[in-house]
Image (cartoon, rainbow, N blue to C red; front, side):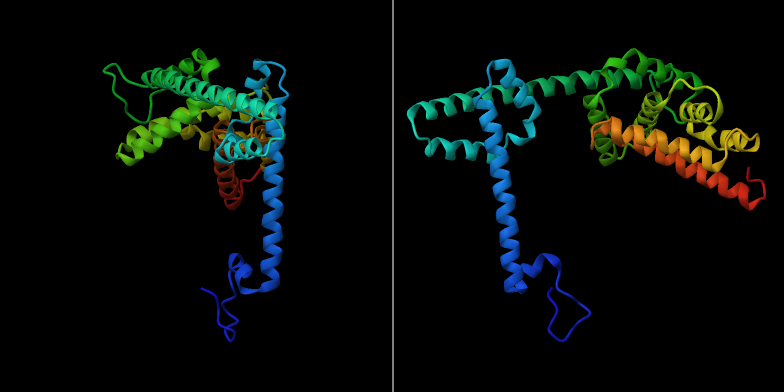
Length: 290
């Protein structure tokens, strides 16, 4: 709701200002036009690159790298350029590219579906490693079951990709909707063990070694380990937080932005940070801060 002239406590919402003020409306219109032109230019660049591809392999690579850009606007731009093409040769080239892109997009879709199906089988195998002798799951997992999951993760090291993580999140969502809270927790444990595996480095001494031990430990072991390391002087709050920050920088800079891998590992590190801060705060209150 837009405020009345006499009511200064309820300013117009930013997205309504284009309607409320003529000058602002013109500014917004120019901004939207600029965005539209940039979008069209980007689509033209992609289409031009596809037209100039020297082989089917190069075109396939372009499609794979820009798969998210091949949407309705892409096809509309192809149609517009086809309608305004100066020669029949240009029309035929555009139509040829359109046909090739459709085939390639369909191939990418089928390959993605196959990867998801295959990764689902891998995820099932990992979950089986967490089951007891009767094929049932109980939390918390025993140490033997945790080791079984870790062995399964190692066994499928080359399949710990976005497809598998995507499946894990899809199963978590479905299990949550169906009220299977135990399965949600189990999948979360698997993701934690995955994150620990990916984040662990080779250091065994000092604060980095302590961090590796903590990352690879089960969550219920974090509190006693943190207190022990802090009490023994292996870590201080400052040194431990610096080590966590370095590990976080590796996740942010080293993994694809917005990927499931980045999300899972970053959340695991944030949880570790939260627990560590609580321990250091508790020790400081008790006069035992290192």
